[in-house]
Length: 125
Image 1 (cartoon, rainbow, N blue to C red):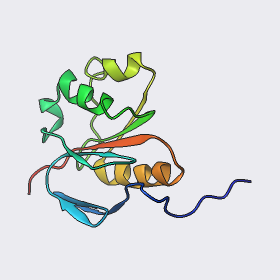
Image 2: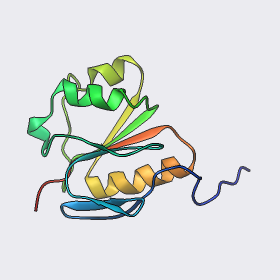
Image 3: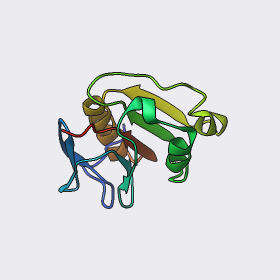
Image 4: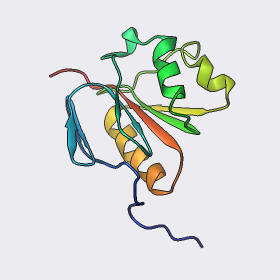
């Protein structure tokens, strides 16, 4: 049996999410954001699923994850696999869920030491 600490040093943690806002390591974000397991969160210039392009997922790829948790906003909406082709071709897993569920899932995976990126859509309020 392997035990893990509740929080690994240097790993990002999402502490709170509400409509139009979330907190990573105590800092508030009010627009869509990429949260890597380590390093600074990165602004993600997209507000809604119909605006997504393959270039948005190339930005995710640049963070070199082994797994991506995609938060599609306030409700579950899937993205065309064609837009995620760069990730799929590199055998990087992508799981889609609403943004609050994505935040919870990201925290579990990051606390286990996984190389995970949360790609989170936040609609302006």
